[in-house]
Length: 227
Image 1 (cartoon, rainbow, N blue to C red):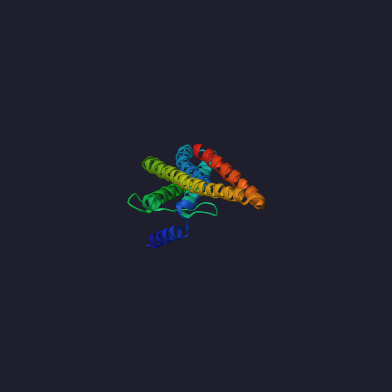
Image 2 (cartoon, rainbow, N blue to C red; image 1 turned 90 degrees about the horizontal axis):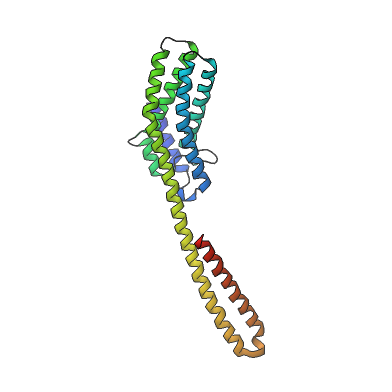
């Protein structure tokens, strides 16, 4: 029961303190995808070195423990977040980690079993062969889940990039509309200045500069839209 309460409090904390997806940069999304991929890779690396360590092989045992640490650290950052990573920041991730698929619980079961297996190998227990076989089965059933979670991060990144592009297009359209209105004001100001004769010369210069600026804005916006 204590574990369940801890898991629940963690979900509340991560969802409450994490920034919404719209505030995450492309670099952060890339880092999240890399972390998820690292978790998937180190799960397989862990199993490989655990099998080798059971022969026994002390160097393989060290490598297996390093892989387990890397796996656990990546998962902790993805779920709890860090100074630069958001943790669980949206409903899609909440569902995959704590919903029907129970991703977090299954991953932690794998971590716990891996720890027991490596401890048994280090202590040369007779239960090692069975524990290693079970670890291999754990990893085999966990791999599709890890692949799926990585795909979720990739889809979130694509969706955010599309939303960002739409926001940029909307902003560019607004800028073009403002520039168009400013150009009309500058044109009318030049007409008024011309009618004013000598008294309107300085005003005409300012109106001309405004017209040039709006033209430059149009050019920059057009270049940004076509990129």
